[in-house]
Image (tube, rainbow, N blue to C red; front, side, top):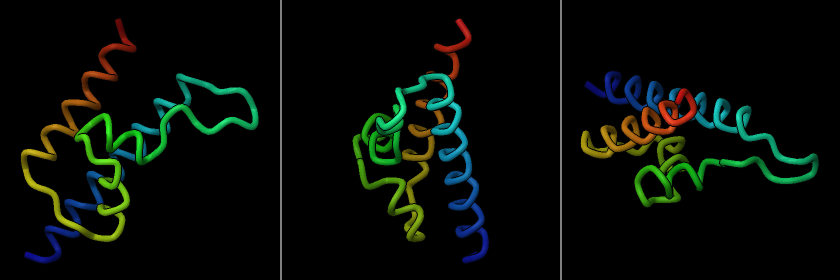
Length: 83
């Protein structure tokens, strides 16, 4: 059971980090500026929790409803870029 939780956290964290990379690649910033989206901005926009990514990195659990919100946010942002 513990292994499943750790694997699930690692999976969503990998998805989030890949999303942030994609987002920043599509929204380049001038040299010397911070990236367009960092982990705390992602958390704030996706779940209204800027500590989300940091807590996932520390091994905290997330609720299924939070997972749905994260994935819905990423899907909506990706869809906006396709249109």
